[in-house]
Amino acid sequence: MRAGGGRAKGAAFERFLAKEFELELGSAGKCQRNLEQYQKKNLSDLTFTDPRFPFLVEAKRYKDSVSPSWWDQIVTAARTSDGNPNDCLPCLIWKLDRQDISVRIPIEALARLGRPLAQDVAEAYDWRYTATLSWPDFIMVCRDLMARE
Image (cartoon, rainbow, N blue to C red; front, side):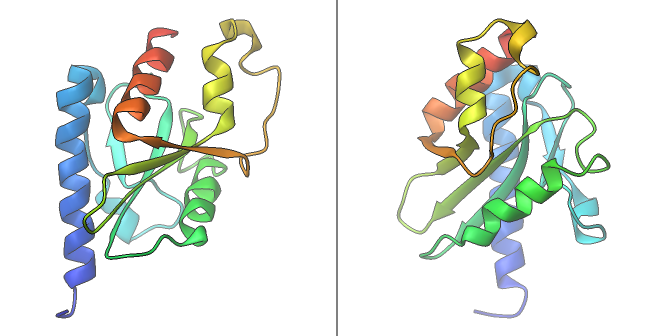
């Protein structure tokens, strides 16, 4: 692979996701690549214009393996007030060669689906407990969480 190839592959995946979010969620999914991520630590890869979007997104596009450090990276960003002004949940989206997109979110996101809004902040969850979803299931969770606002 030539120098910079990994970064180009990642940037292409971020652009692809930005298009997919808008396709799936309409104007609520409008986002752009966060180019500040190359200058500052603890920032998400995509910036959403709708403050109701519930996740801070880390996107990874690799050949054949998933690193545990990827989840740690977005959890750290989500716990940083500068990088997470809307108090979003962490979200890791990855695609490996010849595989479908996978999405890891904290179990807290799924627990919020079944509770009244008033209980959302009443209980803290450990973000080490996660669920891995397909892209269509993740979009359904996004829609449902955004509709609760």
